[in-house]
Length: 371
Ligand code: UDP
Image (cartoon, rainbow, N blue to C red):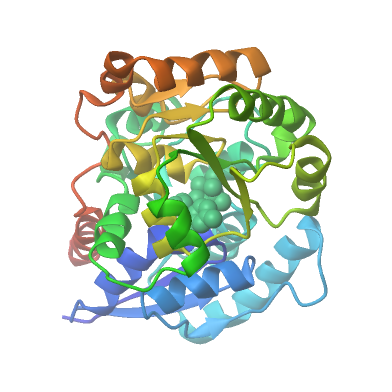
């Protein structure tokens, strides 16, 4: 039988974390010819992930060289990727999630009438600007897609509601669990300044904030952090700050200076997974962390108006608190003061799968092309 040629197109750190397990599974399958294109949308942060898992792109578009805006990013990917598609002629293009790379990658494939496989399909808030622009990116990519790899039944229901055909949807779990299992098995060196944070006797609250639509309210989130650090002398805040200069400027004007607030550069995935592991709970507006935390049994306060990870909320591991200062303080205090409330966050099993999602995706692709 002829090998199936699968081209994976990714460009950001979260896509890297969640697609490296798929790319490795594709590369290890004798019936697949894998081509991996890195658009370079998050150059440094994605390179860290690729180095950690020893995966090398076949093509690197390096699109961020001239500090492009969103429109230029999408236009450049469309133009450059189309040339590679003409040369490689893949049977299917795999994209992941909801970034500019996802949108342009799917569109370039669609223009060549090449089937698109969408990993992490069916996540929806059904609110056009939340998260922005990710919600519309994933809805549009859903229209181009032939094989929808949904993480959960709820994601499948979202796709069915948009009239996607049932036999094009595959509930396979989330590859983030595959990545987490892989990274947890590694024994690597941790930088001394992080090691001393992890080993300290303080209870750790891990904080990450980066959503564009949250920028105006970040000040309120940081006010809650200032309050908590003052009230509890047995806690520390670990905050790897997103590279976005707008986030950095609000951090420096809003967060108080305190030796128990550790402001850090973004951590590489191995180190970050160790910090998640040692944390008492997490306050975040990230999507991926909402999926990882249930597997690590860490409560998460979600600092967003809405979440598409509704399974985590239903399982009790996520609590949607929004960005209101009082709400964040109230929930944090409950988690710090009440151990039975704390325990109630992880009574159910992790809704995102068993770490075999990548294998399932590869097997669906092979079946599709053999039938
Ligand atoms: N992450 C990381 N280092 C950090 C912060 C996050 O490796 O300093 C990982 C995290 O474990 C998760 C992913 O990056 O797998 C989430 O990325 P992000 O929050 O930037 O994006 P989102 O998931 O919201 O798209």
